[in-house]
Length: 175
Image (cartoon, rainbow, N blue to C red; front, side):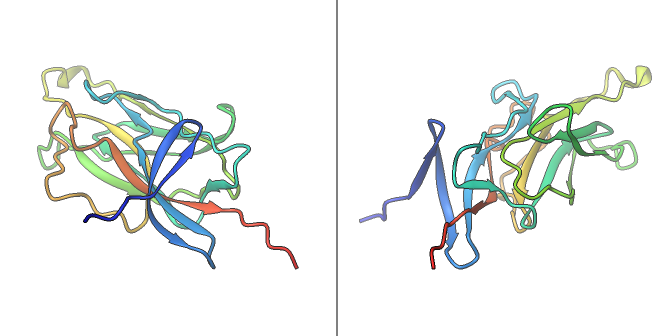
């Protein structure tokens, strides 16, 4: 008999619980990618809103991962006028790749309950015929390891639907 997989329901979204540490107050869950331009798995950039729950995004156990080449990645806090950070992906021309995956250890504000991620394409008129791959941005746990069959050159990104990340669980201890 297989074990039952635990889920947490927040805002009508079922999150698979991957790990739980009571004393550190952390919960690692599987959550969908935040932003993606992939044909079959398009995501608009909004994170799951944790406002009003006992959870927030960990400021010490997560980083942002992105795939693509030469794009500007920006992340905003609870309000879209509150820029958290951004970074420019490296060019893939050096190694003649269609995509690269880069992790960016951004400073995530403590108590972040939602965020918006965006990716802007760098326009290069001499490079219009170049094969483009699926691009995505997602919050992930620092120790996330891509599955062996993960393929960034696939424009439909069938394997890039969810990534694990760590949330902090606010536990009201009473004395």
